[in-house]
Length: 539
Image 1: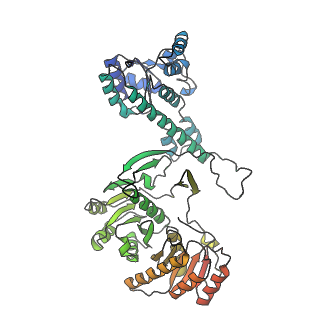
Image 2 (image 1 turned 180 degrees about the vertical axis):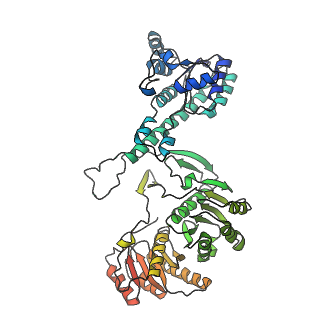
Image 3 (image 1 turned 90 degrees about the vertical axis):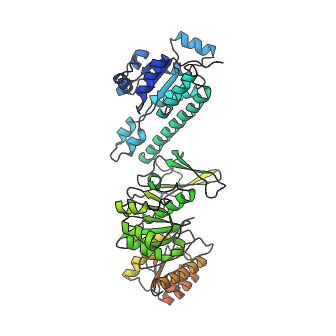
């Protein structure tokens, strides 16, 4: 069956880019009748494409501030009528419904509106499009006969196809465009649902097991994600992969970062950059995290980020090779010179809020180095989502937000002020280490890391051995060290081991039924121990 030429088009767009030329071509080349609404009709008329206003077509005025204008049987009947269905066509004729062969619609910019810092709830509600999604859905449903155009990028290809097909589009194109339209409306509705979930107070269910839980997880979780790019491969070369942009991403998240230079990020680059950026944001002081395979092999804070980098690099120069560097201040030229010229360090990704102009000029000499600029620092997403087979796990994002005033010291010896500074530093870095996690620190640098061992003693052994090597490399005494543990000690063996390696103070959550054994071990060795009351597992 030959395709039917397009004879009548309804146009109502928020994004008016290219629409005047598109409509003028439809009229001039193909003799198409064009119906339009409000601001779109004015834009088209100003551009020389005179059209029939929607109120003239329906015989019904726009009303309620434009809330009601296209919700009319003459519109939706013309879109939904099946041209090969005798009853549909008879109904259309009996009710004076003319066929509409193409809809050109894009929607009120709801997501841009709610992203504005001072947007009110009423403003957000007014930017929920009703007529637009309704027309898109009607046209997309009837894609056997109706062409639905929701993206200005499709204007030129559609015109080319019409020229090649006697003014008609092909069924394959209509179905592709229908998929695009339904994807757009799904994303749009998900954005609205997500916004309302953040701004409407939902009472806790009466059956909640824990009345102290403040956060209420929605019964239906809507996720808006748009494909940002395909990746060369996934975690391994045999795995395909892509990265999707979340509609509710915070302004300074990794997903919103601007890539200034370098090769395309790989799947593993994204994972490691996210872990590094998350870790460095825990600090208010100038901080640098060097991360490799999801673990912070180098970490330090200092008076400036160049000094912090130098100390972080010295924590583990071998592991730093091929790692990610995350910085929580603007990157100066000196930091780039230190890693690129002094240390000759190969770096996969450098991520920071901003870069000085001379730093960028020096970085440009490493053309393959991926440089990401976030534009600032924020706390990131409030929910963390991970996939398992057939389901999603959702939890609140873990942050080190404990108040040190709430900490307790159960040991006879209390930490000194300098030890407490190191303990607080190590506690923040330890959260970024894979569990079971032990982090040994000195002078606010993570000099020994024990990540991801099945038992905590092995993690402690690794951390202490690495700390001793770092002290030897830095030519400092392996004494007066502090250690952080992401969860409690089930036995005293970790304390005894750390005591043999020069650890003088320990920070941990506490809460084991054998806490008294660890406390007694600390008292025997003269170690100060701090209980935080919270653990920070990272699996």
